[in-house]
Image (cartoon, rainbow, N blue to C red; front, side):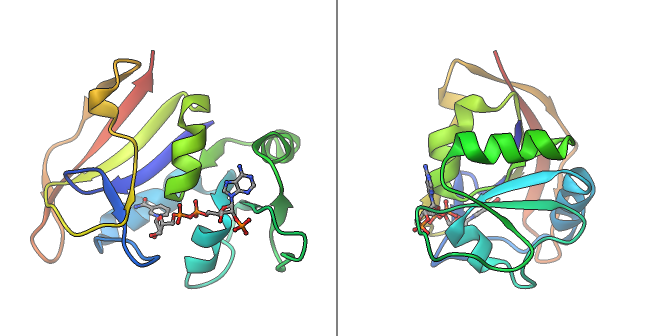
Length: 161
Ligand SMILES: NC(=O)c1ccc[n+]([C@@H]2O[C@H](COP(=O)([O-])OP(=O)(O)OC[C@H]3O[C@@H](n4cnc5c(N)ncnc54)[C@H](OP(=O)(O)O)[C@@H]3O)[C@@H](O)[C@H]2O)c1
């Protein structure tokens, strides 16, 4: 399994249930990378998706609730169950958030595709700081580009060692 995430300079990923930065190129890349695969997400992230389940992907939602059964998703009550579902689907598996899933399951990932925005914004959800963790190396960083509102960003690839 690999993870994909969009962060600000202090590894912030969200506030009040929403993303921090609007970045069309990042959304496009997220779609391209995850298309055709399984995406594992927490119930709160699922509920924040504007259009419901992500089209063209096997949506697996983690919850402890017995009543949660929306259309178009597989519901898992543990990460082992989620990984079994992804395994049965047979394509690439992505951990797509939110904060609680990243926190609990990042060590199960081989690689993390990080969109790094060079800005600090008030956040209430964070990704683990991989720069402070010796088990992760930054294997690749793209050229700096800019969002429509002028925020500098790059794409980085972190690898579990
Ligand atoms: N920047 C990014 O790339 C990115 C990506 C995704 C999300 N986000 C942001 O992250 C924030 C949401 O993160 P969050 O931590 O609040 O919520 P979350 O991780 O999306 O969902 C949390 C929920 O997942 C379920 N869950 C968590 N661990 C579980 C486990 N071990 N077994 C079974 N179910 C489990 C529980 O659902 P129940 O309560 O139903 O039991 C829990 O309340 C939002 O601000 C969102 O915008 C950012």
